[in-house]
Length: 318
Image (tube, rainbow, N blue to C red; front, side, top):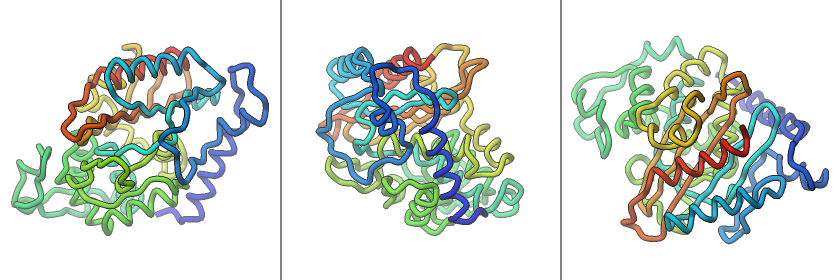
């Protein structure tokens, strides 16, 4: 397992790199550009802050606002091209319930703790109380044991709540997963509860919330950075690739020939999220986070909102 110092050094290096990458947007002073491309998310965010797109792209901001009006929802977007440093942000520092998108970081923390080779060496028992909510894999294995590898795959690819809870308990609880993200440089995300309590998503409650910017940087760290060794990164990427739970989300909003590895999430108050590593052919990967929420507790969500927001991103960063 890497040391805390190593991880924080890695995060700082990534941040420094982003600050020197060229921007194609015009009409932006050097000071403004540095602030816009900083990879450190603020510790708090004002939900009423004005919408902005890096480089003053009024067309993108208008497109996101139109989607919000059309779907009656609040959008949060942060996406960037890891090659050029160009970014698109919209309510990027506002808090959203992260829901099941966090499961990619559960798997990353397990890979960090045990290594890829060690995932098959330890198994956890699936008790009858383990499957909760959406648990297609663990519900089929009650009374049996599943390896850490099987549980990670179930949590990431099938969004299995029971598998995620078993893994988080093995790590030492949500506070340990929160500490893992802090080691990556994320002092914004708050991980407090297990599934399915974390899907409560009550407005104004900071528990189990993050920001689009914070989760985008976390996703870059564990999939493209050096937070994990190369074999562990490759395994995590394989679990994310073509995940069946994200078919109608970011993947549906980008060109068909682009590769997408994602983790979706849903919660009360119409919460619908997707975070992804997007790979345009022959180009550097994009990191894309799209989060959404509504005002009523029992509000439905609409996958098309996420897909159309991703389409705006792909148009701006392609």
